[in-house]
Length: 349
Ligand code: NAP
Ligand code: ZN
Ligand code: ZN
Image (cartoon, rainbow, N blue to C red; front, side, top):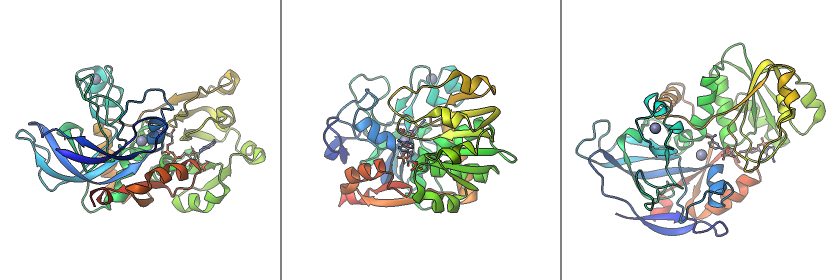
């Protein structure tokens, strides 16, 4: 099926109208008419080849929501008309230890990314993401989305949501804990909502004084301006867990310093350059640093179900797809509340 899309054709050109071919649904495939697609900071990193692994042409987008229009003969989980989501991965080997545990994002053969990769088993067939009218995905990599929720506000849950939910669950964040969220962007604002919903006392670390009021409204108990040394040292040794969502290089040692003995810092933000961590920042209080990649299918569905039950959704600014390059620039300036979401109807018209 010929499908309208927006693509980057090099690291230095803007994303622009492009035409792609989607396969006819195979027996286990679901064909989805996309209604909304979120704009993740990873789209910018990849479109501009900041991670040095870009494959062009690149149709970005891995926060996809839409409706099922066709199903293959052997599809059992979905029917035409269902509201569904697709996140950051569309396939994996399905047989390794990680896949068997439902941790397909850590597939030992490498998960198949929704974009900036090749379709399973191919070295030439580029996978194209959600800045497009439709997508065809194996049903095992499709999520159920409640039709009661606003699809524009659900779309960011497929990446920003699961990427913050998964480490909060893995590190068992909950009642009685003091938890820091560093960076109030797309990921960070979901981290605040989830940590609060899980019962933790939440503190936002931000470089933007202007976001203080919003942080409190999102559920933070306290806001710390991370550029202010006095505010940072007042937090020394007070945190059980900190989730760092920052997209650019910054000082991790200052953040480690706010952890208690045995506290953990988990990185989800993925700046393209190496970080310097002082051994002593860890040694003196038995602190640890970890990382976390999106989430598997099972956990993503659990997160979506939790969001439906607790009416948790992203705070979004819906945009015309023609504004997507502008949205990248605004995101880089921190001028987003708190996720841009493309109305894919603007691509069809
Ligand atoms: P975003 O909306 O742009 O938010 C990033 C936030 O980081 C900004 O709003 C800003 O918050 C803070 N920040 C930016 N530059 C900074 C600097 N120089 N120093 C300190 N703070 C700074 O981006 P996002 O979509 O949430 O993504 C965040 C990062 O996570 C990206 O690197 C992305 O690639 C990565 N990511 C990782 C995964 C994963 O699986 N691990 C999944 C998705 C995305 P304040 O204004 O509050 O300071
Ligand atoms: Zn993402
Ligand atoms: Zn695997």
